[in-house]
Image 1 (cartoon, rainbow, N blue to C red):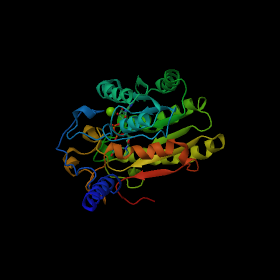
Image 2: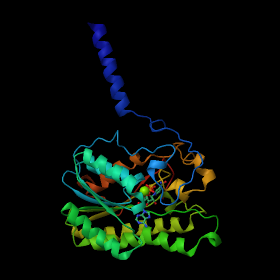
Image 3: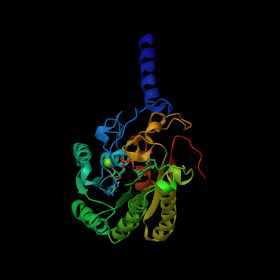
Image 4: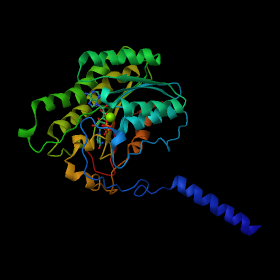
Length: 311
Ligand code: NAD
Ligand code: MG
C-alpha cells in the first residue's frame, strides 16, 4: 500500500515537474539550420528545419474570449504563432500576408478553424497606402469589429555595406516596417473601443544594431518610439499600445535574405540561452499585452530574446 502510493506520488511529481519546471535551455532544440535560401518573402512550408508555431502545444485559457484581432504577417513565423495562440485563447483572427504566401496562410486558417474560431484571410501588399486602409475596413467587416491590432509584418534584407543597400530596398523596408504601421493604426482608430489593444513587433536590433542591417535596425528603433508616443496619446481613451522585441527567432525572414546565408548554421547560438528562439515562445508575450490583465502596461517593449541585455 505504502509502496504503491509512493510510486503514484513519484509519478505525479514527475509529470508536474515536466509541466512546471521546464529548463529553457533544453525546452526547444538547439538548431543548426543548413545553409539555404528562399526568395523573399519565404515560406514556413519550405524551412529546414521546421519552426514551432505552437500548433501542437499552445493551450488557451479563455484570456481573449470574444476578441477580434487583425494581425499582419500572420501566415508564418511569429505572426502565425500569435494567430494560433489568439485563436486558442478565444479570439477570431484576420490575417494579412502577401499573395505569394497563400500556401502558408491556408495552413494557419486551417489551424485557427480547428481551434473553433473564425479566420479571415486578407492578402495584399502593405507598401500600398490604399491597401493598408482597405485592410482595416475588410478586417472590421470580416470580424464584425476590431479590438486587437498586431502590427507584425516586417522586411529584413542584410547588406554588407551602405553602398550595397539599394534605394528601393531602403524605401520598401521603411514602407512595410514603419509607414504601414502608421497607416494601419491610423485607419483602425475609428473602430477601436476602450479596452482595445495595439501591439507592434520591434526587435532586439533596435538596441544592438548589426552592421549588416542598417535600414532594418533603424526601422525597429522607430517602432519603439512610435509605441511610446502612441501609448501616451491613446491611454486616456482606454486603448493601450505596447511592443514585443524578439531576439533571433527561426522564421522564413532569416533564410530569405534576413541573414547572410553562411551565418544560418550559427543562428541564435550567441544568446545567453545558446539557441535560437521558436515563434511559439513569442506568443505568450502578445497574449499578455492583448489581454486586460496587462491593463497598467503602456508604451512598454517586452523583450523576448534569450537573455540578451537591453536598456
Ligand atoms: P516572417 O517572414 O514569418 O514574417 C514576416 C511577414 O511580413 C511575412 O510573412 C509577410 O507576410 C510580411 N510582409 C513582408 N513584406 C510585406 C509586404 N510588402 N506586404 C505585406 N506583408 C509583408 O518572419 P518573422 O520573423 O516572424 O517576422 C515577424 C516580425 O518579427 C517582423 O516584424 C520582424 O521584423 C520581427 N522580428 C523577427 C525576428 C527574427 O529573428 N525572426 C527578430 C526580431 C524581430
Ligand atoms: Mg510569411
